[in-house]
Image (cartoon, rainbow, N blue to C red; front, side, top):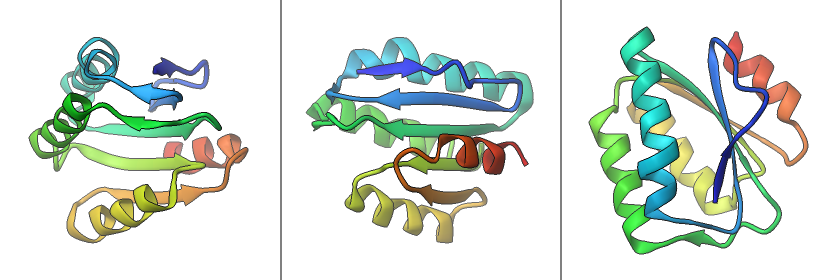
Length: 120
């Protein structure tokens, strides 16, 4: 499940992921919001917070995630990842090295710090 956080602002799209992410989450929430922001600004800054009950991705959601990342590879300006599982952090560090965007990991509960960094 994905929900748009109240912290979403003019510069940063903020989401919380919990339970299991589905293709519907990508197709009805995440992708439209990201593409709308890219259309408006030419880039996007994200804050993703993982809930304590995160269970992973459905197979179709993994495919949607990969398509989204590759389609907009150079549009992601900053990704603030809050409470991400360790393997997501490893992937994020790789993305940080090979893309134009920057990624920073934050511990669970550091949403305010993550938002400040993503907004800077």
